[in-house]
Amino acid sequence: MYILSNGVKITEKMHIRLCRAVKDTSKKHAYFLELETGKLIRVPRAHRQKLAAIQQDPQRCIPLPKVTENERRERFRAFVEELGVIDVPELEDRLCKEIKQGASLDKLEQILEEDPSGWIHGWAQDEQFLLAERIEEWITDPPLSAKDDLDYWYFDDCPICQMMKKMEEGEKNPTIAETREAFLQAKERGGFVGGDMFHNPNEVDKEVDELLEMAKNKRFEPGIYNFCDRWCEKCKDTQKCFLYAQERQRRGRNTTEGKDNGYWLEEVKHSFEITRRMIERNLKEEGIDPQKVLKEKPKGHWDDDAGRRYDRAPCLMKAREYMKGVAIFLHNFHQNRFQYYPQLGMEIGFDDIKEEIEAISWYHTFLPSKIWRTLYEKECFNREKDRHLKELMGRDLEKFYLLVIKCINKSIEAWRDLAKKRKEFSGTAENFLTLLGDIQNLTNQSQRRHFRYLVGRADTELSK
Ligand code: SF4
Image (tube, rainbow, N blue to C red; front, side, top):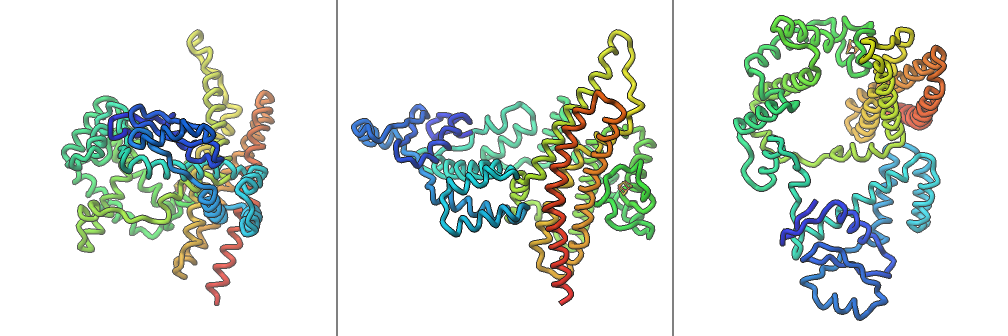
């Protein structure tokens, strides 16, 4: 975590203890960090002599900062405003009223705790961020002057991690050749790395030219692939889909060049590479040097911490819970199918439920990512000031929402059919159906109403 100026390490465990101490506003204890040992000292304020003795040695025992009740309450207020951005308007209204009436933080936390939405976990996490921020301000300033413990963040011997560690330690940024070397070394050691470090730039340019040419074809419906479930085998819109055509072209090229089509990570990396090259070429056409843009310090943006906020959205938390549960189920299911393989060389067939297992499998990872995207698009829509853009975004919002509903409905259908076909799975199916029902309620009750309201409001505003 941190290393003090005298080399003493502050571990993650100690950091947790420090966070607890800065939050203690009971006035019963005073807290100090002993510089020489990095230990936390807690002294009851009633022990005046002991306290006075410690305070007489301020170079050795550094008093901890405090996060006051008011500061926590203020953070709570900001947290509630963010709730309004995500969902649960009834809860937000109630908390806002209580805050206006001056309710104590204890009371506000109690309301949150009793609410079935699960937002209490979101608050616990946010409060932890506040405490950690205060520790960081204090510990990195003199006299402690701590620095990040790079061994904690870059603990392994991966060449790429070690290169990043050197950057953090203040050495110059690596050159392209050094970066390439680090990536090559990592790959030689079996790491999943690659992307533009290994592709011939001329080949990439050629591919970009072909794609731009292909995109001129009028049969493609722009952006159709943004609102689909990416199950191309079952899709009726393949002819209209540029992404589908692009993937087919790429697969054909791989086959011609004798490359493996099944290595999906390479495919993802290659897509990024193509996108990057397109951006670079656009920038050059506009007379902008891409290298200069890369060197510029990125400006802060409202969505820098969007992911952190959405992590606390109840529908997303539930969807992730569902995803993890299903992943375990699928793992056990396939493991059981192969239980006799070592002795008999045969696996247990599942043709009768293949469709259901495939659907469950397909949508369980898709659901959280599409909920995340929906939350993000909703917030973008809320923030957009440009009338024309807002109109376009309003149209897309419902499509993002419907995609979430599709993932839920397809999963529900699959679990129900699975339970009907195989009685031994009925208990498991029931549990997952309950979870999906919860996700459905959270999205139906708040998201859809909210979406309709937002889209309706935008329409009204735009028709003025
Ligand atoms: S072809 Fe595939 S990517 Fe394109 S719209 Fe259909 S499912 Fe989506």
